[in-house]
Length: 282
Image (cartoon, rainbow, N blue to C red):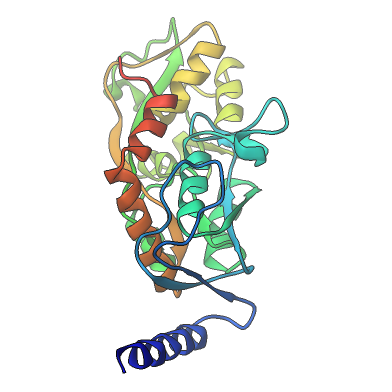
């Protein structure tokens, strides 16, 4: 009798979730004891769950792969687990996909499009060094945080900008659509902020003298400064924020499954090991 009741409940749950999803979505399930694909080293998803994905058996991730060390196009063309990309978000998304019994598909595009893709149901998740704010919460849901991001200021070595206060009346470069752009326009006005498609382009314009400073996350800032002699990072951080995974507003079942899987990856040390790999403790 218990087995029959459990079966009926599972069928009803499946039908309920299918009714909530779009017609093009498919229902994926990950049950306790199921085997994950090779490569992640993570245990299989430990809690029975049902959720919708755009394509059966796949987790489609939208991103902007111009944000090292969180995501970047792989130099060797293969990348992490043959995704073509590498970085913190790539490895985390792969580990989550393994937990859920799915194949990770990475879709690279500009930052604004990466956000729109998950809002419009063209991707299942967006990972792009993404922070939670009130405007984004209107259009998407977010998982629990998996990393902390610090916004910093890059300036030329001989710049007159020595502190955050010196940014007043200067021209600041940011990546379009990011919280760095939102913070700077709020603090200094749109006339003093120039938005670029990605962080690399913002830094190139800084080197060319077209902007006086660039506000961006500390991790990619370190990469850009190391690759471009003559630049430095101010000692004082601009702001501190948490990174999370964006999910479509209607797909609460996938959100719940991701949070469960993310909690397990934190508990077994996988998340921290990924962060330590790309951002070693000093």
